[in-house]
Structures are given as C-alpha cells and as structure tokens.
Image 1 (cartoon, rainbow, N blue to C red):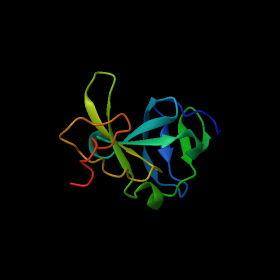
Image 2: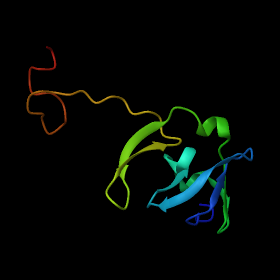
Image 3: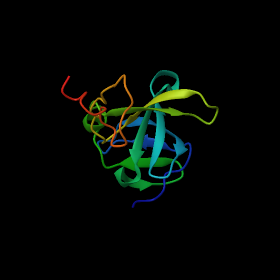
Length: 116
C-alpha cells in the first residue's frame, strides 16, 4: 500500500486533474469531497493511492476512469446525516429483488415464490 492519505489533502488523478479533498479516512477506503460546495462524495480504496504527502494525494486512476458510473452507497457522516457516496472502482451492484413475504436465510424468496 502507498502512503496513507491525510485529512484535508488535495487529491489528483493520475493525469493531473484535481478531483477533491480528503474528508474522511475509513478502514479500507478514504472519502473525498468534490463539486460545488464539496457536496459530491467519492470513496477510493487505499490501493488507488500512487503517493501521498500531508498536503497532496496522487491516485493511480485517470480522470476518465474516476468519472465512470461506479457503485453508489448511502453512508452517514459524523453527524448522522445521510450522504450518497460513489465507490470509485467498484462496479454498480446488481439490484436486489424485493419480496413481500418472509425471506429465507439464504436471502431468496420463500419456497415456491421463485416461480411466480
């Protein structure tokens, strides 16, 4: 793993574009804020870090790669407010079917409902 990003460090893509600022460090990834008023959040795995100093993080990913349609998850910030975070590098998750009845422990539909 490359160096650990620091809170507040500016983040740059592999092709030199500014993509945001580090706002949170998690166990497996870090979150950056970007966009107008810092209201777009993206999560990057630490293995996407090419190099880091206290003021700057350089990624191994180009801007075009970062801007692909990646998976989105809702996380809560330190104040409990929900925020939609794009998990850069994680393909979009398949939609999970909704079942009206009780689901089995395997997460599938109750017996016999799969054929309906």
